[in-house]
Image 1: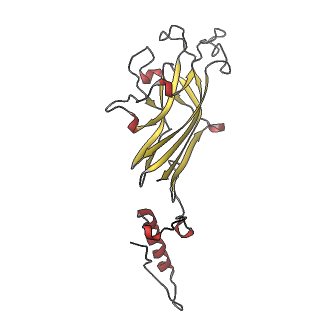
Image 2: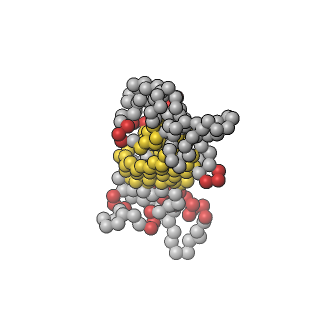
Image 3: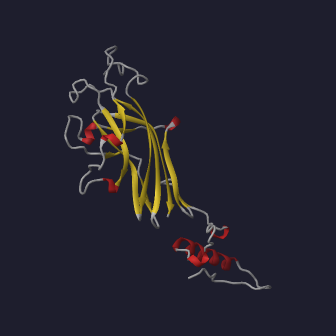
Length: 239
């Protein structure tokens, strides 16, 4: 049914704050639980009276407004704290045939969508990969692949993603190994400006209903990759 304020006023009435608050509360419930077609303009349905302050969740960094969700997270700058990708988690370090994708920590959003939505997911990542000259590759280059993660992207009862390496961003290992100078070894033999540096980014559009979890996952044959800087952002628009 169309919106009807619980309290109405005529000329000369005394207006109380609690009556106005009650009207505002009723309007908020109406806007979030379904605006009826009779209250919409055929040309531009978003009108000034429909706007309400967005609901902000400071923990997840998500904001729920009139037409959907938006939000983002990033890690970097003076307070950068690394997260990691590693072949020791993904089962590919020694050439195992099973490709088990693991979620990259701190990069996942969960949203409760109110209706069918178009979700745009943006991400970027900067990583230092290796050095690693383990027996897994007999000196050949190793890689870390990164792709969008979502719960519906796994095969049933597994952690195997329904994609191939071809559709992922990849970063090569610093395969030259450690420098022999000094005791202990003085870091990688080649600087990361020449080998082992990864700068990746991607954008994916999902059609989603109800609850959506989206983030980043990795598959690696490298011993360890330090993910130094990364950013993720999500926009969800109701259809």
